[in-house]
Image (cartoon, rainbow, N blue to C red; front, side):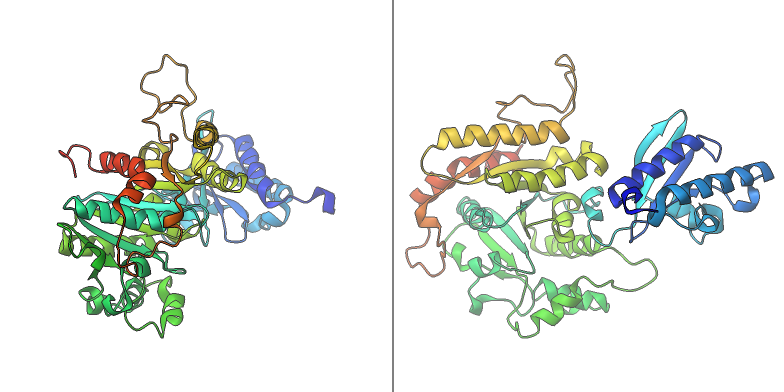
Length: 439
């Protein structure tokens, strides 16, 4: 095949779907396209090869040869181009996997995609079930430097002033920040999240479970409390070797995913601590840790952004992925855009432009495209203040640029906090504690 005729990754799935549609229902009413870690694609059919009639086998052979030729390097040799669920160990469970996504439906045929990725799968999976009932919020930014950690610390302090018990979980494991902001070194517990994952991998998470949470002195004189589950513990000497093992499989036959292990850890802590609110501080970017905290933990997600082309382009990558794969009806109800670091001058103009860009993003990828007469559609006007695209603003303030409340003897200045974060915090309180008389 010449260079000009090569099928590239982004076209291979389109080609495979087209071939599956051409086959129609000759091989059954459902076809699962399995894409492996290298991007190669082959269909998985129901039943066993020996169950097919000679005529059907001949049709499969012809289909396989055409698929192999059409996909090029993203296909398999014709004799291995088709899989049969009945001939595979756990083939039926693969065929019915909850990870498969419906990508086409035509004339009685359903075509599914089962994407075998190293990373990125959690962005399209449904939230995990949990037993605990306390609210959770994830602080996420597609890019760093948007004031996420400062906003988290101040909101936690503000809630503690109102008598709430807040549990902050630092999941920015590669660049722990909120742990250092809220806990001086001599307040750190013996162990942290990375220790838990390492020990859980060898079956002894209980050895560190009860000694990896500490109270922040920031709330020492407040009616509420800020409890911190940090990324690291008191001894940080082996942090990098531990971090390298943090994401490893825990072993066993049915290995739980990293998100499932995280859910188990958080639930155990919630049952012990009984917090009024859990705040998950996610790492930035498109890493699977961020995917787990944003989409899988049954948490409201605050998506931090600044009005820049780089930010909107990055969020577009993610929103397009959600549009194609995610269970939108569940997930889109739980997200809220946050305008971080709104400049001191020209605020009205800035927020208007931010709102328009945010609306374009949501309207294109997450909102329903319906007529105005449809009343139950998930769709909002540009200026609808209850819409997830309508930004909760956090105003830039020079005094917060080197925010380090534990070193500043004067503590947190309530007037500065109210000016910078009052609008955000008031609305965040309302969203998270809906149904209560007030935090």
